[in-house]
Image 1 (cartoon, one colour):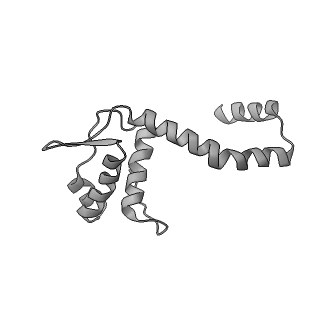
Image 2 (spheres, rainbow, N blue to C red):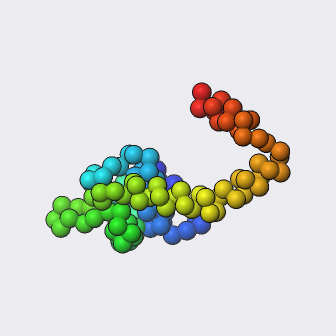
Amino acid sequence: MDSHWNDTQPIYRQLRDKVVAMILEGVLADGDALPSVRSVAADFSLNPLTVLKGYQQLVDEGLVEKRRGRGMFVSAGARTQLLKGERQRFLEQEWPRVAATIERLGLDADELLRSTKAVRD
């Protein structure tokens, strides 16, 4: 987790987003423990209440579960739930802009596939 915070949204929200990214990227898997509130607060010079608020959002979304006396853990199925939501958001919000750009530039499917393969290699 990097320690770069910006002024565009509250830090607790940015912290939540960083944990979500770690789950999506497979850095945190189902059942993995999240770093403790105290350690995150100390490592990133944050108020523990800010960290707790970010973690609580994850709990409220069902992505993380609290285990009394043990900490917070990634919920079973969290990555699947996030992928479903991210895919839906992409298709509804980002894809229409991408599709419009593709059409505007006159790109065809074969050209896009070749370009995608080139990027992967």
